Image (tube, rainbow, N blue to C red; front, side):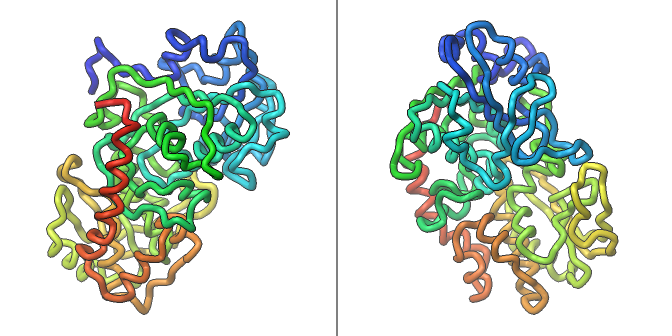
Length: 398
């Protein structure tokens, strides 16, 4: 854990001390969710609502109540009223990812504070792009309150979004699947590289963290763990998710409905002995694999029954032995290859989900052509190297 005498201070805590001038005298919108809390647990909506000299006018969140991501709590529709502040709250997860001019009618500055997970296809870095784009169009300031990249800010890996797949939920900008940046750094890059629609630039302010370094994992920050979403129960499940989320695009359980979601995958037709043997032969760094059997069941935090609920599945268990050496996305691609190679006739693709997760047709076509994991990994090396060279200009932390 981080040294208790020098804890990480996230941007939200610093906003009300050395950065209060950014909000004073302004009408504010807040884009946040259950993660947007100060160190003492106060939700940012409440802190801004009480802050003298500024006026919070509207809230933007995900499909959940802005204070929770629990499916057992009734989820908000496209528009709701926050029960504590009495302010309107709009859902950026549904039909509108981009705030409309009417929603931003009484806004001078948008405060953005969401904990992300380190993967491009997770919705929050994409919502950041949509919000910055809407703000740039209306000359509204954007204030990004920075938080850690929970899987460190070191790894950069995976397919970069194809040019014709941009400005979408899951692939707003041309960044790799594993981007190795914080939300504040990404905002700076979106602006500096003119990645917003039409090449616009927002009036951007980033309130950085104090005390965070790029090599830190979330459990080394001293910050309280709050599940980013209902099925990301632990840091371990979130790290595995960066790779095994790919199984949302095929007829294979990704472990939802177990106590270790995303750390196990399985299907009733899977020859898991053969698949594990293929994976072990690859000798991937920092990870081992075992055969398992499991039955997904409905959990209280599920909105709907998980994939293959109630069926006994033959599966693969991921064991991360060295998280600093472990390449999560490469492992997910290798696992998909190990399932597809002996079972190409049984794998059913959900092309819409695959498009959101990969943002290029190359993965599916390479698997169909018999490419090896090493060949697939090599296919993104040049584009990741190009991204790294641009990324360096926007990093805030060592």
